[in-house]
Image 1: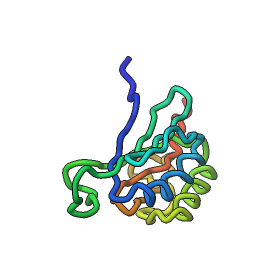
Image 2 (image 1 turned 180 degrees about the vertical axis):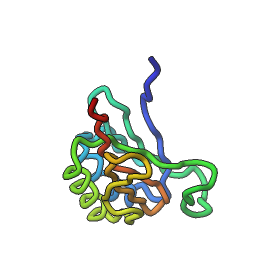
Image 3 (image 1 turned 180 degrees about the horizontal axis):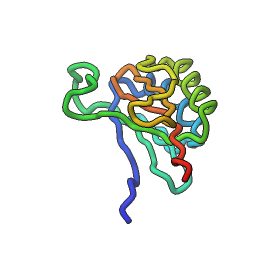
Image 4 (image 1 turned 90 degrees about the vertical axis):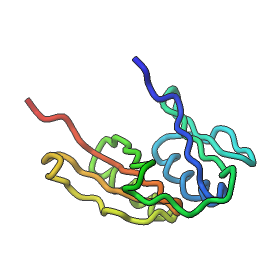
Length: 134
């Protein structure tokens, strides 16, 4: 089975990216990996490594959700309370609230999530979506 080995994200400012990503990723259990001028990585055991990179050229501005490119990255979380906690960590690190933590019955009656976005338009979702009871 093919799994995602790593995810690379280009941000306009690596220092600002670190300030926003580090608190969220460490709250998710990731550990800081390498930290160099051109980028920073976090790892979580054998799970997908997440890396932020400096841009190779001048950026035209942040990504706009809904345009071609990045949609969002969703992290599966163990409880609604943990979704709330991670949402608060992200907001405290400067992420913008897109959608407050709540149930999203349009997906299913168990789908509890929040959505946040960083300065670059990178969107994360924290989701608690337990299996349907049989």
